[in-house]
Image (tube, rainbow, N blue to C red; front, side):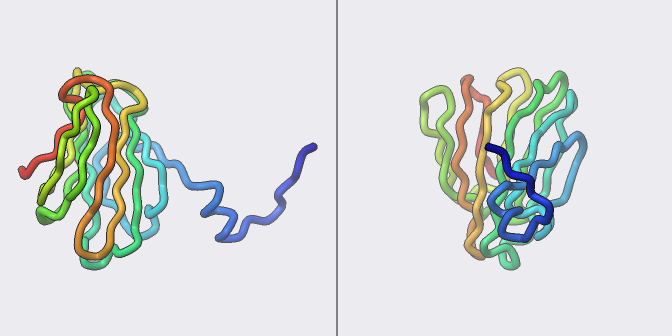
Length: 140
């Protein structure tokens, strides 16, 4: 049985989801909320999160889509408001008042990911990295 979808409402888009491949630096906006963002470039870059105070309800998921040959990918908040953690090589890596998430080059594995959700005060992170050092959560 197959179904043909001829029109797509906002509810359908939320259920299907949005995917975007990033190959260069980017600054995220409200329109990017809910997207699966694939990090896919040999040279990493910085992705800047929108201001936490205007981002309540926003969410983003970042997934490594290709290995990084030369530099890391970073996800940066303007202030130290990243809370939560990631499981990296079976070890909990906590985040308490951090501002930078780094996918380290030479340690990343395709499929490593972090998810971010905002409540208007903090960005809450959860992630999974396969190799030791694949994901770090720091203040830079």
